[in-house]
Amino acid sequence: MPTPELHIVTGAFGYSGRYIAKWLLEKGYRVRTLTGHPDRADPLRSRVEVAPFSFENRPELVRNLRGAAAVYNTYWVRFGRGRVSYNLAVENTKTLIRAAIEAGVKRFVHVSITNPSESSPLPYFRGKAIVERILAESGLSYAILRPAVLFGKEDILINNIAWLLRRFPVFGIFGSGEYRVQPVYVGDLAALAVETAKRSDKVVLDAVGPQSYTYNEMVRLIGRHIGRKVRIVHVAPTLGLLLSCVLGWLIGDVIVTRDEIKGLMANLLVSDKPPTCPTRFSQWLERHGSELGMDYHSELARHYRQRR
Image 1 (tube, rainbow, N blue to C red):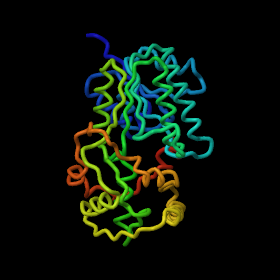
Image 2: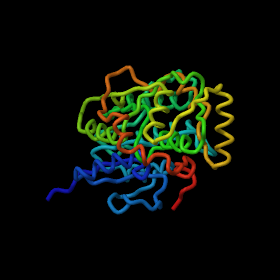
Image 3: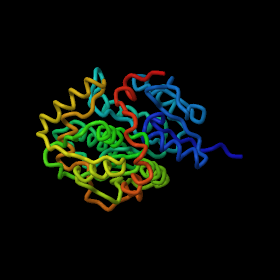
Image 4: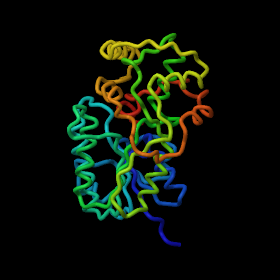
């Protein structure tokens, strides 16, 4: 029996990386993850090979990438904290791409974001655009996927909106709330990643679902499916950020950042391209709404504190 083809996923113990790894395992591939938490207890540990990112040890990184038919890169940072920054994320991804070239990786699938731009005043979107350019100029065979708002059982944003709706009599929305979002199911993103890994052409795709909503509509839809009457209060972005910071301090997390508010209100989480992912957010809510918001999902606990 031939040895299964090796596919490498960055962050298979995280969110989108976990779904990609599961898809690959179901198809019979050998899976290795590069992770910043190599010692973390995780249900996937017994099914995947585990190696550290080793960004500062390029020979080791090359060894861990060698022999891979494809690399799926989900590595990024949601916001800067401590020594972690967008500039560091860009440099680390550049190191990963160069190591992939040296290791002879055949295909590089990169998870980006909708509407990246090197001229963006928002470092998240600017950094994503810089990485896309580095990859495009690298000579690697690549696919770039640009998801908008991800949803799924392990999601942070959608879950925590539901958590807030369950516990507070009013829900604050920044500004008018008429800016749009286009949710995409994380399982669809994973399927698209595995599908585009089989291609040989260089491709850039918006990974978006078939439905888009104003932020007002999305919050009301979530409220309806968790059985809560939604009372929306529109607040100035600066006041909303201040209130979010106070609540974040009380629960020990970063709920939202100034740049995230700006990106949301600038309609950067919606695509003008045809949908590429089939799952309808409204139908997913019908099946899973009762489970949302029962517990708070902490960004800091997931990415900065957990070292088990």
